[in-house]
Image 1 (cartoon, rainbow, N blue to C red):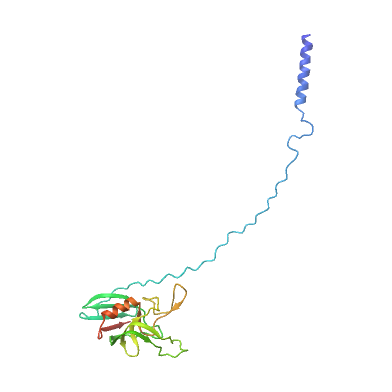
Image 2 (cartoon, rainbow, N blue to C red):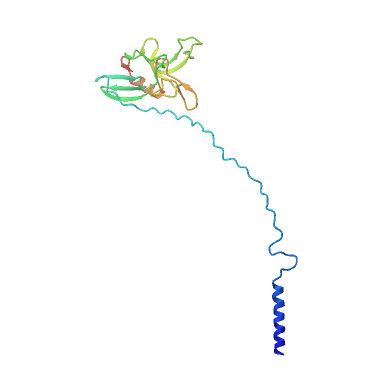
Length: 213
């Protein structure tokens, strides 16, 4: 009897083991449905375009003050204009009183070098062009506030408010920050209005003017 029960148990156990080893109907050991890969549209990406180099705006010209030359005279007032430095120096009794940037004659119409003096002082004058219209040197009648004549023929130290850059290089053709071009004077020594006003008040008729290269 015991042996029959044991055989029955072994049979049941064998049936159970066989059933567990079979996969359920209609399935596979792995998923029979393999999803198609989602087609991701290829993103054709061009590299970031390298921006064209942008030309920086021209920096505003700041005149660099050159070294101060020695006084041309140990006594009295004297004015020294350096053509190479584009700078004016005012001395009194051998000491520098003030100095500032200027612009002198363009290459075609240079400011004369030499020793001169203030011949005449003029205020609120109208400069008219000695060149006829059509000449590259012609200019419209121009009002000047303070002018010191130092050589006959129309050579003055005067304010030039229409000019923007003064100092080294201002007598040569040069480009301004806004893209416009300007060049030196027609032979005069031009300067900002405030500097011309101070020079006019300080200098007197007969004050020596040395213009050096």
